[in-house]
Image 1 (cartoon, helix red, strand yellow):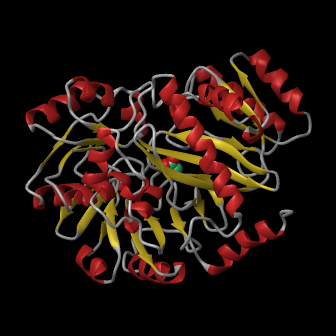
Image 2 (cartoon, protein in one colour):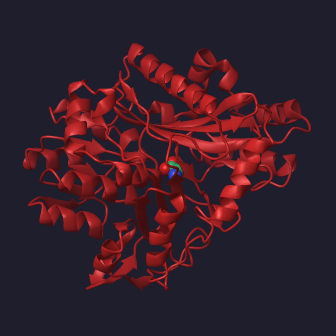
Length: 441
Ligand code: GLY
């Protein structure tokens, strides 16, 4: 059983359906999940994915043998707790295991104990007075303002791309506190200079498997311009690192993730599934941006594109607490994911937006299609639902250039949707290499 309806769940459901009967519980009829559930002899139902009792009832009615909960809000709502309580083996942390994501103040206090050198300087503020103190503490130094709770990946604002100066940083922090937007505290942190990478670490709560680093394109427009989004695309290189970082950054990041997973176990917080951990590679080593208690979306699709085994087997090993490093075979290739979105996406709330897409032609061209916030309205005709991204295209190949060629070739066949032209392109990668050249060895 998969719970959720994004591109991430499409990719997981696709891998599950290859080796088992897939049952999908989702908020809208995601065409990828509907298709794979049907073809595998499974089923789907629509409902509130954040309602633990509704998800648990769906699992009971179908005698589900293995489940995965992979989105932040259902995890924070305790969906895994409800499934485990009724005896459904489930991949995903309980609400207390997922606190590492839904409470950034908690995550920072943990990190402060485990790896203080990897923590940016910060202040946790709960009152307007504390906001003023924090802003004057940082003086001229640029800051990032982060709500403590969940905001769908869109709540963090940084001086430079989002906030013009400390006056705007202060106003944003005050507005978050006033509307309790994303928890009851706000983090004001020094802005770290470096390049971002994530590791989608897979764990049974004790053993941790480390795939290659992923690089995400969070901004809406080419050249990292425009508003922040859930992610317009992502890539992995053929190898563990990215062009702007050294192996020591990767190793240090993996060590920190190991420490965090070990600590959660010691605190008796049930953690299983994916610790999607965000870092900056800097001249002084890595700095932690955040921990997410589930695969990233789109980054999950990179890992599922490279995956060369049986995902239900991996789920079984995780649920049994017997995950071994060799249990997650990944092809030694590069991978690229591109989200295609409606023209309104991240800019304004528009009406449902219609587009045509031929999945079979794309799959023959070596590209996987993973629908997200869209439903099928007629043969090869789809419509967006809600305000999120419409559909992702994913490919892996021996080189990133080859993977990109496949994905871009298919994206051009959907003229109604917009996408970033610079995801994985040579000029962008050259810019990333430049970041490494500017860092002392
Ligand atoms: N792509 C960012 C996230 O899933 O959190």
